Amino acid sequence: MGIYSELGVEPVINAAGTYTVLGGSRMSAETIAAMAEAAQDFVLIRDLQTKVHAEIARLTRNEAAYVSNGAATGLYLAVAAAVERLRGKRFYDITREEVVCCNVVMFRAHRNPYDLVIGHLGAQYREIAFPNIILPPTPDDLARAIDGNTAAVYFTTTSWVPPGFLPLETTISIAKKKGVPVIVDAAANLPPLENLWAFTEMGADAVLFSGGKDLCGPQASGLMVGSKPFLDIVASIGFPNYGIGRMMKVGREEMIGLYSAVKQYVNMDHAARERWCEEQIRMLSDGLASHRRLRVERVYPNEAGQPIARAFVELADSFGSAEDLRNYLLANSPPIHAFSEGRQGVFINPMSLREGEMTVIIERLSAF
Image 1 (cartoon, one colour):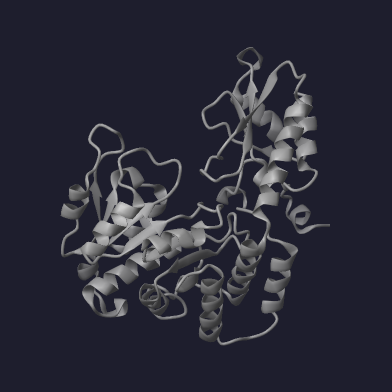
Image 2 (image 1 turned 135 degrees about the vertical axis):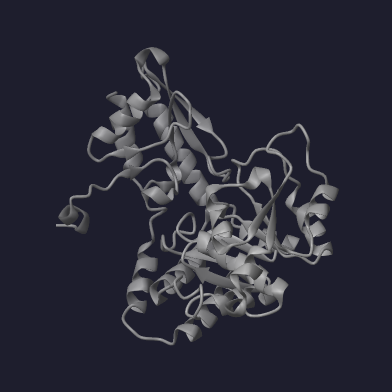
């Protein structure tokens, strides 16, 4: 009996993508083996961190790297490092009142549920512009928003943000003139592979990625890359140091797991993976070509703006709703999880599928 069977939890076919609520992604056998090996021996955690961070930095063409327990924790620690940098003393010695006086400048269009950790730390949000095209922000708007209490500028790079922000290059240029670090939230912005170093090459001080999405590392891991002076501050605040970082524990298993995953990611054939995804979409389209209720459309890029194709299976209005189709896919065994995103049908994202699962999806949809 497998562990999920023992618990009465049925595994699902993930046709949605690398969503945290579905477990993010699958780790490779190589990564799992590396984590199991790491669990067998004791090490000096600070020594392991130093070596793992240096190797990941080398692999990703960055000055420095840091493994956190998730991208949101990375953001929390990065803002704490920015506050320490501004106040000129250890974060451990900074009072709550001194944190509250700090602000983080961001475009209102970039506000999202993940940036709540900024407020949890105690820093103030300084939002500029509006999430529309009516009154576009200017470089002067950003420059005026940065003052003596600005700890950092926060910028997110995803496809779902509305208009109302300056380009990252412009944002970095203005922040640098003001002497303020830029923190980039790129949690789901892999692929392309080049993003691991593209934003830091622009001048970003810290860039955050999820370790458990396309990197296929441990779900409870995050990767921060950036400048060595800034990430040295992050490391001095984070686990295993006393203070706020102590509760953000990263086990030796997660450190080794993410290191292994990054090593595989930078060496994998990404073009071959893209071709495989296209083949899966063609299989789906061919398999449902004669279906009287469903029509398949190739969509590019995917929901996160990643350069990977996915398919939209459109349901004719006269045969039910998108919710009916989603519930049908979930009601059978194994359940198939897919999102509709407000459209009349479901998206099928091949990037989270393993060989053979598209055949199951085709068979299930064919019977609808």
